[in-house]
Length: 102
Ligand code: FES
Image (cartoon, rainbow, N blue to C red; front, side, top):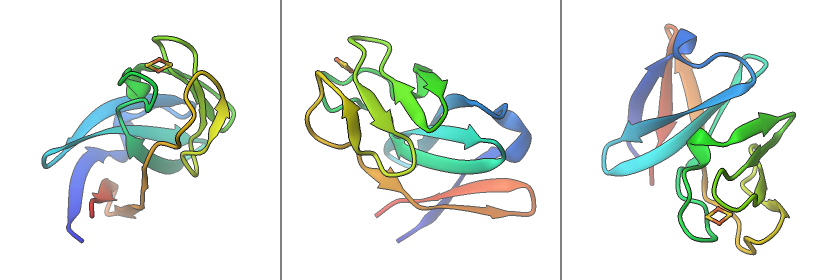
């Protein structure tokens, strides 16, 4: 499982998300109060960009039709999406954010 550097810790303001590229995989990178999480960027409803979604607490809302996902696990917490989004492990090293892509 390769670790891919996707950002510097200062690139994502706490309480926000950013779209990042990890090799072939486009991810949504989230900073929840200094703890980083990553999911696939594509909403499981119709592919909306979760990294451009609104972050409230531990939940991101898809900007296209309002599906809501738990940022920490990828689980759906609000429709219309029914399938969870893939969540990737994140590691911080020397102020850099790495995402582990399977
Ligand atoms: S594409 Fe995300 S809610 Fe429809």
